[in-house]
Length: 345
Image (tube, rainbow, N blue to C red; front, side, top):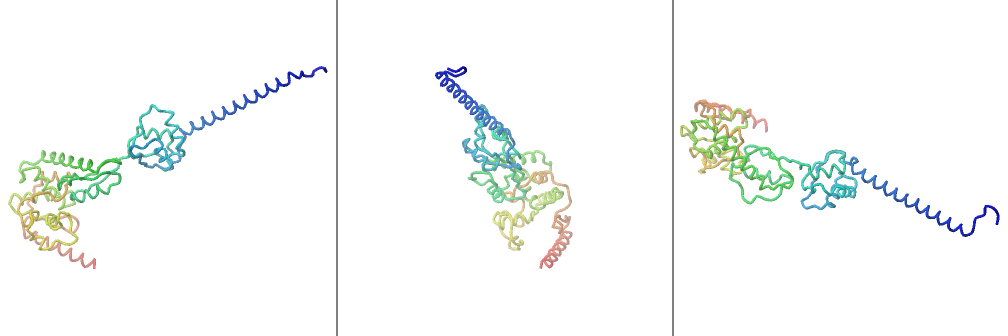
């Protein structure tokens, strides 16, 4: 045998060792690749998301984690629903995901999205109910409000819903919002009645609500409410009919609160309990829902000598002490109406 030659039995053993070494290297490489993939995935959970601008997304009640992940991906909040599920799996000790409407800021990461759904506040929607609407008009706005659910079994009493801007969340019921508005009107009326003047010509909070509803419909000028209330207080003390056009409109419209035509002589002469041209004193119920300012005007009217008022053509009114003054003011108003009619033709 030549010097340096390898024994035949040694060659298979060396080849086996080399194979094991290669296998070991392959396993390390595979393991290293898996680790790199895992590290990348975990890093993506904290990376900024695809949203370019804030977006609100509704999460339905009872939705499973997979359904939520699908929705967030479809809405563009996250780029991969699988990474969202991985993020949940990495932190199983956190609170359950909540239902509702949530706002996700631009660039929301998966971890931030999970946090918003676990502990974030739902989006606060707002519904503005203007002063002076009837219950029917108010319920129509509530019915059309996006995000509210359910129906209203029994219509509230006229004048019982406080007009304000109301906050609610997606999924709240219409009945719960109506209940809040009703309770708020009760509180506002009680507060106003507790602050009433000593010499009022009305004797109950219910009468204050009725008078406030008429004041609300008579003027949209905040500075006039107290003076309008003062005129009505003077007429009630003298047992004069209130002669309020909005009560006539309420009667003629069947409670709708508006007419698509001018008031007629037949409307003024109509025998109806809401017609304050035919009946003295207050009508038997409110004609709309008054706001807080009109409630306060009804219980703390301005002291005035006026017994009459009529529109002045600018949105306000001319107040008069005598019928003669009032008739002149009415004649001016009718002239304004005629001129407006000619211009529109």
